[in-house]
Image (cartoon, rainbow, N blue to C red):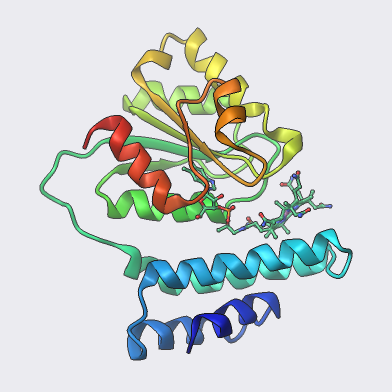
Length: 211
Ligand code: B12
């Protein structure tokens, strides 16, 4: 099972075949899980291109999401690396209000767990107040927000302001990710950092929290 075949299975929306294919790539071909993740993500980028060119429609987007999810279920345990001796840093993660995209946020959550963070995943379409409440309750020092829609990206600023108002902003690092963002925009909304993939995101979070 080579990487191109995995990418192709996502693009062709092969929801029934992807789990077995990822299993073969991992167990028989001993492929690196991070490279498998990259191949699957490439497939999602091609789905996106086809959607933009009106070759794919909402039904295909839904199916692409399901296909990616099925592949990730198999991949997740392999992404784990143990670092159990260290004290856990708490991270609250969520997809911003108005946004239902959660696959990228879920990958980030898995990778943070693997890196020995204590992760509170609030799900998708999450109100700023709920995020603030969770930070207060847990004493988390990291907030990771995902935003895939241009329409809802300003919610990052809303969370930043709400944390500030609650007197909690200085105690947390606010890290964001998702397609419409870049570092400049992230900073404009008050975030401390931006990452365009979960692997770099975890590295950045580790650096900012000095673990
Ligand atoms: C699958 C998909 C869906 C699925 C989502 C399923 C799910 N459970 O998530 C469904 C079908 C529900 C969907 C719906 C819609 N979608 Co959609 N969707 C996509 C698609 C094709 C892939 C997204 C994805 O899962 N990628 C794979 C994951 C693994 O990648 P990722 O999310 O980018 O995450 C990685 C990094 O960004 C980063 N990351 C992400 N979050 C975070 C957070 C932190 C803290 C860090 C450090 C890193 C990080 O790490 C991740 C892993 O490396 C994208 C296109 C694209 N290429 O992004 C469009 C896309 C995001 N959707 C789009 C649109 C327009 C919609 C709809 C409005 C369509 C409609 N007409 O209804 C609705 C909106 C519904 C809503 N209110 O949210 C547009 C957004 C355009 C824009 N700029 O606003 C896109 C870009 C497609 C396009 N080219 O037009 N969608």
